Length: 356
Image (cartoon, rainbow, N blue to C red; front, side, top):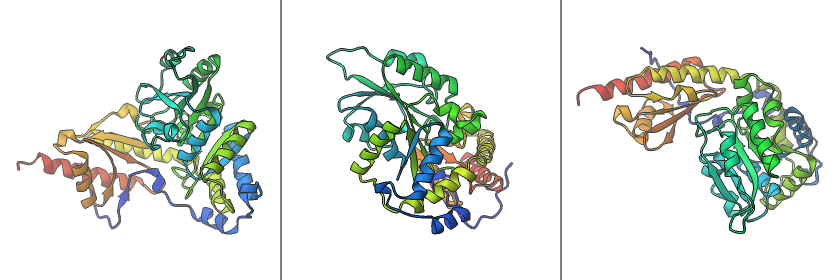
């Protein structure tokens, strides 16, 4: 039985994007040396881009306002209009990026169903079609690690290498949507470069579990990054004194990576606690990082109704209709917060089981 206790403010488990910058980040933003980044003259941006490239084992980096833009400029830099991009069927690049790869880049997605979002190399190999006048020419394979809709699941370095080897053998480029790639590396207990090395390009977010207020980074070979930089400008992502953003990103990389393990431990505690509550279904095999997906159909509720019940008790979560819910742990969520949330869910479940 979980105790609820008293709570004065919301416990916000909607996403790790709601994290606030640390005091050290705010201080760095105030004192950051600045210049015109569009001219390559912002020293703080240049330092962040070099640091990110080094951390991920690539030649160069590019600061972009968002992960969505980072993925898009990467697709634009690798492909031409009418090309085909092979991707997992529920990946973020398809599901949550407003159709930009087709609407803006003019490429066609070819879907491969993964196992909880993790692609199987043989299935990727089968999806790469040979030259035929009727087909969009395959040009890029995109992998998401961790995989959001898969439950925050992790793709191993071996699977990543196998997929990239297949793509390279067929003359295709590879891109890693690594929005939470440091979560993946933490879960696997490996250096992040083991997961990024085989890919031609990588995007990762500073503004999720790493707690920076805004920004993502694209890394790759220098010539690729320069093409991506041109597309960033075309899309309106060229920034001026962007060192005020980059300063927080530097602190994020230097201070926030090692603490991600705490988020994973809290997510596991949350997942196991939810699984013990009658009427709640949790696929615990997917609780590998900082996300917990669960289903409330057994309570006789849909997602909207369940979240309304949570909010009455000062808890926020994300919808996954019709009966799914997502909770994400992050720097502002403590073990005590998780215990309170479990008590709230248990209370809702008990109320639903009472004769009406």
